[in-house]
Image 1: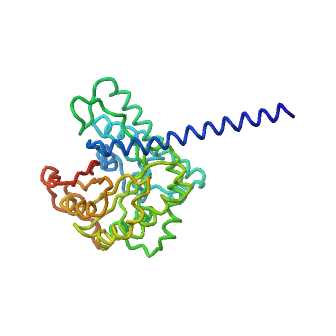
Image 2: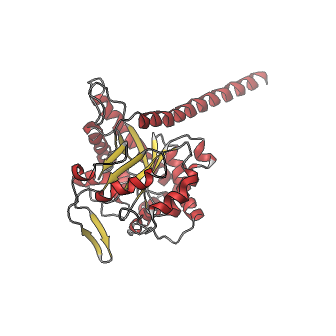
Length: 339
């Protein structure tokens, strides 16, 4: 009996020590990212995984978009992550933007357990790509874009992508942001995916292409829940905007900032910004945000000649200004990427 009791105590201590190490590593992710963001260095996001996948021959005309390749061609995703890291990206975003457990069950006909494992593997694929790229570049004095010539490059990071509810619908709703759902309903939709990806080993969470105030509130409230807080994985919130003052939903960015102000002191929230937005609007949008928060800002704007959703389908917009023209005043924004 004594032997069994000792074994039980030792086993419990071992589990406790392991959990403590995991929590310390997670807490270190928040501190590391905050330190980098406050150091005045430019941190490069890839921001264009799907674009590069298409350039490499992938067909993304599916309801799951790039998330289908998590199942069908993970090697292509991994090699694309590698190419971004080697080119100088400091953060690469996982292929899970349009991936959900519900979507995988529906489109792949798999169980929820297998769908959850598949979604989680999107982070593993990105981490594998990061580690393989790091083997190529470490010890060679390689510098990351935005770092001073005398500095050695820091090990790149992986961001787990969590797209908006409209991405799951795959009907262009992320360009309208009018779901007809409450904050609580949106929280119920996002909760399991956020918990799963936060525990998957990513360095941070990308809450991206959020088109409306309700969904921003839902995601920020989820970051405050105990199940997410204990994982201690930092996150950023990135909004999708239709012009220089409005979200895709038509709500003003001023309204957004007023609605989320009480959530901006969450220690897990490390940055706020915009993506999937025409580049000529970026300066004005970041200026509005900067007037309401001291959080670091981020931007990964649309590429030139991007597509837009019209009532009759998709159309190509005229070429937008090159970065040298629009990236003039980003209000001290330390996180920059692009499609």
